[in-house]
Length: 381
Image 1 (cartoon, helix red, strand yellow):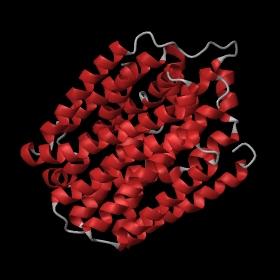
Image 2 (cartoon, rainbow, N blue to C red; image 1 turned 90 degrees about the vertical axis):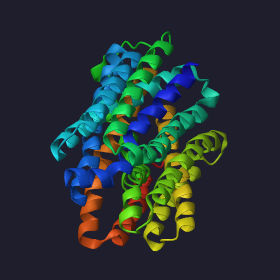
Image 3 (cartoon, rainbow, N blue to C red; image 1 turned 30 degrees about the vertical axis):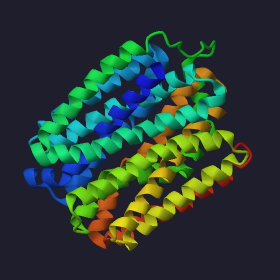
């Protein structure tokens, strides 16, 4: 039950990341916003998410994973409700900013709790399942909220999602009581953090795998809008493509974690997943056919989440000090989101000046180049 409620919280948490995507066109009309303004809104979430990743790890080390993750979900749910009440670009930007801050306090403490209660031999599977649960929630956020937005416009569905998040936060807080905290250490937290920050592989891994977060962020937030506006696709078909990207990601997280744990060629699976993710992004602007794009979105979803799941497993594997699992995971997320948080904004800037074709290709090709960073950690990797 504890594993189930952690994954449920992860799914609803993800729902509140992506449920704004189906309403972007309505929001733009309602608040008189431009494409660049939509980039500001979607980027605002990640600006809040990125710097507080490390704070989440430090806070969890002091007050515990359970309380930290609970506070994060409450903050997230509260500001999702406020985003539905927004009347201007500034209101919506600030609401999304604080949603990001709340989200940053949940991920690594929740995964830290999970790592304490699952057997080592099945750890990679459960981390993959945890990551895949994100995509289930995100898919529901796009598909379900496309319907709700069509019936109620964009405000009430956001308010409803925030209320659901608060309810699940309370349920999860009650269910995860009794999970043991990480082992105590005689070394001060400051010293342990300093050791982590001097570990080269903790910097290289998230940068080399940046294509995973770029694909998740840009595709998850902006692809539905791209399909509706640029490809003139019906809202329902566009939302199906966006949902396929996210729901197939569940398979990527679950199977990716399972295959990685069972394989004798772990690094090949990791690198192959990154390459395929980049290539799928580069293929997006070459096609407008619904079925072809559906296949691309499915493969992209599987590969992108596999990249992220394997990245988290690797971080847990290389962390010998068990008291630092939450911190190291939060640091990895900080490095990724510090770069990935601005990606929707810069993507829309590229679109404005160079068009979608160049923009999708640039994101994919950048991901391919970053994989070469793994050459600097060959021995420890």
